[in-house]
Image 1 (cartoon, protein in one colour):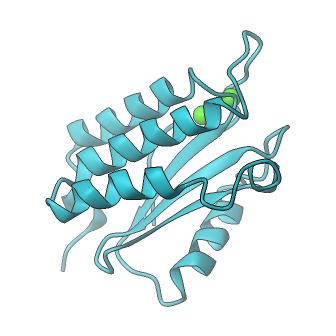
Image 2 (cartoon, protein in one colour):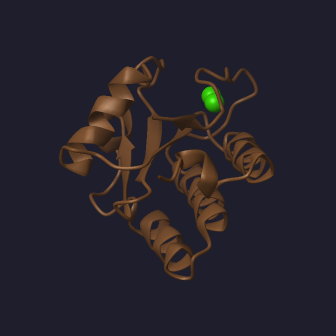
Length: 145
Ligand code: CA
Ligand code: CA
């Protein structure tokens, strides 16, 4: 049996946390990463469930985004809150998805997540720029299910 922990060393996990911190210096949006082995329900629906479980709707501008990854299923979902969806084009997460997929295909798991987080931050910047009174509304750590 493999654990989610086996996919990332403590050091790699720290790199992801640093990427989230860096990305959030570009945008008021909040980025979280959730990893689990597998989901028994459709991955998009599971991502929504996790989004709610992590109380990610709890941002002033409803601009949190969850990068959800089911490791054993080789699936990931990028789920943005309403405040984001209302103002961005439908293919908004395409480049983030592509950059992650490219890394994952090469077996570069940590690099893919880091690149995804940073790209998401860059993309969000245009719609939700960082301001000097920004609050870190959601924790930057990686959550695991
Ligand atoms: Ca913030
Ligand atoms: Ca945060």
